[in-house]
Length: 95
Image 1 (tube, rainbow, N blue to C red):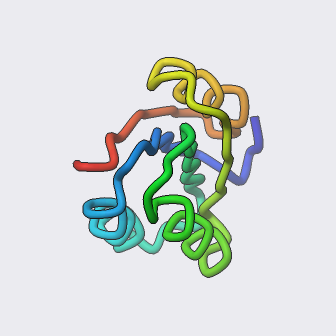
Image 2: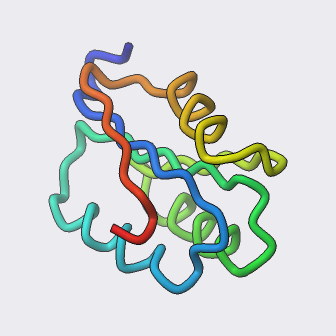
C-alpha cells in the first residue's frame, strides 16, 4: 500500500475500444491525485490496447498492464496484485 494513493480502480479490458475512452474520461474528471487507475488488457485484439497505452502515457494516475487472454477474473486478480490504494474497486470498461 502506498500512503499517497487512497483509491485503486481496476478496469479489466477485453475488446472495449467503443467504450473505454468514455469510461476513463469519466473517472479522470475527478482530477484526484490520490487515485490509481489500473487498466488490465486481457488480450484484446481490437484498438483497446492502443487507447489504454495512450491514457497511461498522458495521465500519471493510469497504469497499463497487458496479459494473455485468461478471463475477467484473472484480469481482476492481476489488477489486485498491482493495487496500491487503501480502497479498491472494480469498474467495467462499459460503465
